[in-house]
Image (cartoon, rainbow, N blue to C red; front, side, top):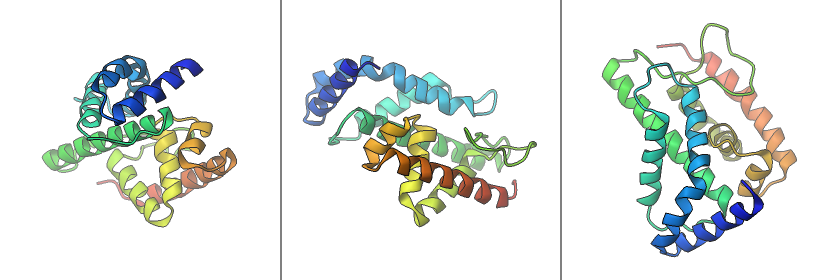
Length: 192
């Protein structure tokens, strides 16, 4: 996204946050491709034949964002951080409903990006990852946020630093530590 488009997105987000519904109509074409890329990133880790498709995930996230009421958007990075949270929540809710229906069968799998594999035979499933992230948040909320923004949201180190108001070096250090912690935590979990 160009610097001008980024500036346009921020301006439209601020206008939308103040109640200008026409700003939302102008905003969505500017952010649609990025939202679709985020959803594709989420869905690429899912099992084949997953009934929720990328476009459906984008549409569901869009509906939840629009229905979220008045959010005081700060900038483009803040919007995509919230979008990442919404998409993660949609997939976790979907996985929980499938797990309840199937009693643990056909669990959704999601590989950790840019991290050594836990074992060659299995990837951690989304619910286990969500539980591990929740446990990480209880210990260190910033590290959990960094994983969510970088892994799920696809934000760059610089964008993540901007959202969290920390240095890029801090983001990288916490990102690496969180990955190691998550891998250790997920390796302890027995498959159901």
